[in-house]
Structure formats: C-alpha cells, structure tokens
Image (cartoon, rainbow, N blue to C red):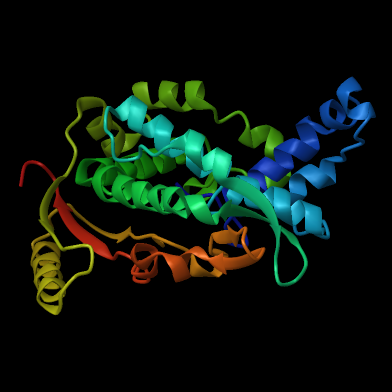
Length: 296
C-alpha cells in the first residue's frame, strides 16, 4: 500500500512514521518519566535508533541500533520464533537461550562497540540465519501469502481513495495525527462495508487469484522466457493477471556481517569467513509468479 507524499511522490518507510509518532506522542512520556530521572534519555536518542537523519549518531547509539535492527537483533530473534509458533511450523526455530548466552560486546576495527558472538557458539548464529532463510522460502514467499499481499494492497488503496486520499496514499509523517486514525478497526470496517472495491470483495470471499506459473528461487533463462511469454499472452487476451516479481530479499547482508569473537587472542572475524553456508548466501532470490483470476 502506498505511503508517499501525494504531491512530491516521496515515499516513506515505516521507520519514518515511527519517528514521527515518538516525537509527537511520546516526547513527554520519555523525557519526563520518573524512571528517566537517573538516565536523562532524550527523545532524539530514541529516534536515532530508528535512523533519524536529524540526529548525529554516536558510537553508543550505533551499538543499540545493532541490537534492534541488525542481523543478530532482537526483532529478528523474536519474529522468527513468534511466527513459527502462531503458524504451527518449525522452520524458524533455533536455540534462543544458547544465542543469548554466547553474545558478547566487542570492539570493531574502528574502535566502536559492537555485538558479537563467542567463537564457541557461532553455529547458533548460523542457525538463526538458516531459520530466516527457511521461513522466507516456506512461509513469507508462499504463493497464497504473496497474492493476499497484492489484494490487500489494492483494497487498501481503494479504501483510501474512498476517504478522499489522493492516489490511494496514506497521510505523510508530517500529518501523523491523521495517519494514526487509519488503524485496524477503521480499515477492517471499511473493508467489511464494501469500500475495498473488487480486491476487497476477493479478500472477504477468499476468492484470490491463482498461481498458474512460477520460477525457481533463481530463475533459469528458460523459466524467464516462459513466464514472459505467458504474461504477454494473458495481457493480450485482456485477462486479469498479476505478475509477482518482488519476492526477493537478501538472505544475508555481508555489509552488516555478524561478528565472531575469539577469546584465545581477543580477535574478531566475520561469520561469513567461518561459515561456508553463510558464505554461499550471496545471491538474492528472484522468485517470480504469474497469477490470474480464479475464473480463468
């Protein structure tokens, strides 16, 4: 669903909205809370963790940011286990207790504090990476989940247009009070009232588009040619189709490599240097699927 400035076309990330919410709604709660009397944490120190460009980063803020948005962060460690439990699958399971016991603070080559993993436990960091890989392959990239992303996106745009939002865009972070009104209750209510258009009706009736062709995670030239030909054929016959070519991610971000701390000589090395599995995760998936309306 579009999150952009209706005039300039600038797009915003969810972190931009989070920063605006913290500055507008949580300023007094953070800075004037009795618990904060001993720490004097400012709102800017909190928003810096989310990438607030108006705040100059410090070595300590970079460390905290790594704990909440790195490759060994609390968010990733949480959602893999949480999603596995609620979905009833085991793909995202790893040894959380072992992971936390093996985490240490180290010093990078630039003398900045970093989160690292002890050399005796780097395999648990590897297992976290593998768990994420399996969850994406089996769950997040599942064909039914992907098509409902599309239907929800299109239905959301229709709801926003019906409420007077130009081009089906949410309000910008500068209009955060209006943006916060678009909560689950409002959007679900609008969807149930039939304001989601054709795609809203598809969601309500569970009549989603069906996948008629898909490539592998790394499409071959033959698969690329086949999906292009089928897409063109369906487009010329005026069928309702959707080509999903956005099922991609970085299995492992080598520019944010997990660091391994070797206690024997207090040295630090990258996990990708130690793990052949992680080292092989260079190529990002480029899975493509072609969907058509169920009646076809």
